[in-house]
Length: 465
Ligand code: SF4
Image 1 (cartoon, protein in one colour):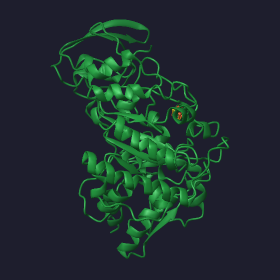
Image 2: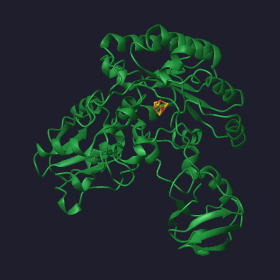
Image 3: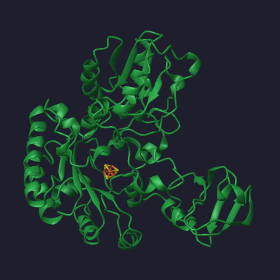
Image 4: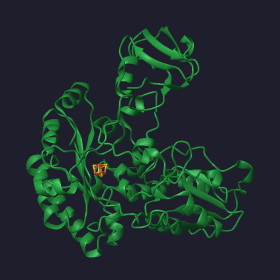
C-alpha cells in the first residue's frame, strides 16, 4: 500500500490555500487511507478535511477548509494506491506476450482489475473478482464496467483464457447485471478458435443469459511479429466475411427481440472485407467508439461537417475527477482512439514550416484507408496522406494508435523537409512519448500533433493560410 503522492496543486484551490505542495504524500484523509482514486475522490469530496501528510520524511497534520463537493485541487501520481490486481490468465492472443523486450514497464502490466475497468475502460475477465468486489461495485455504483467474454461455451472460454476458472467467472457477469450495473462486453475473435459456430453460440448465449449487456464489441485479435503462439493467426478474408455475416445476422435478431442491435463488429472487419461501413444509425449511440467500433464513421461525419461534436475518449466518472492520474499508463495498447493527450504538443515551434507549405497527414495503414478518400474529396493538391507501416510490431498492427517513433522516423526520413506533417495524438502518451519510448523531439522532421478526430484534422488543414 502506498500513499497518494501529490504531483500538482491547482493554484487558488483549497489544497493550495491550505499549503499542500507537490511531492507531499497524503497518508490519510479524515483518518482513512484511500486504496485508489475512486476512494480518494469520495474522501476528498467531504467538507473540511483533516490530512495526515508526509513531507521530506516529516509527518504533520493539515486542516483543509473546504465545502462538501468542492474539488480539493490536487493531482496524484497514480490511480491505484494498493496493488493493481494482475491477471491470472494466459491468453495466447494476449498482446502483452507479443511485445518486444525493453518497452515502458507499464505496458507489460497484465491487469485484471475492475477498478481500472471502471476508470479507464480496460476489459476485465472477472476471473479474480470476489464477493467483496461485487459488494463494493454495487455499493459505490462503479458503472459501467467492461468485461471480456470471448466465448460463452465453458471449454472454449477456459481454453482461451488458459484458466480453469475462466468459464465460472461469468457468474459474476450475471451478478453484476442482476444488481443493475451497466456492463459492456467484448469478444476478441481468434480465427479457428471462437469464430464460426462458436461465435454464433456465444451470441445466442448473450441473448439467453446476458440480455441486459449494454453492448458487445467484436474485435479481431492483434498479432505482432513477436507472437510465438502457433495457434494464433490472422483472419483470412473469408473468415472475416464470416464474422461480419454472423454479427449482422445477430444484430437483426437482437433488434427484433431487444429493440437494439447489441453486437457490433470492429471497423477493422469492414476494412478486411472491403465492405462499406454501416450507417451512423446502425451504430446506435456509438457506445463502443473507444473499442474501434464506428470510429471510421464518426471521423468521416466530423470531417465532412455532418457532426459538430468530436467523439473522443469518454472517461465517464473519471472526467469529473480533478486528478487525471495518467490513464494512458493503464490503457496502454488497448486504447486506439482519440484523446487530448497530445493537444498542444508539437516539435520545436522554431522549426515548424510555414502554414502554406504542402501538408502530409501521417497515419497507420488502416487509418489511411479511412482518411485518404476524405482528403481526396477536398480536391486539394497540397494535401497528401503518408502511410506509416508498422515494422516495429509487424503482424496486423495497422491501427494508428500503435504507430511508433521508430516507424515514423523511417518514414519521415524519406519525406521532404519544409512540409507540414500532421500527427494524430492517439499514438502519444500524456507526456508526449510513443510506445517505443521515443518522443517528438527524436523525429527527423518537426510535426504538428492534432487531436484524433475529423473536426481537428479539418481545422488543421484549413489553417493553411
Ligand atoms: S489478454 Fe487480458 S486476460 Fe488475457 S492474459 Fe492478457 S491481460 Fe490477461
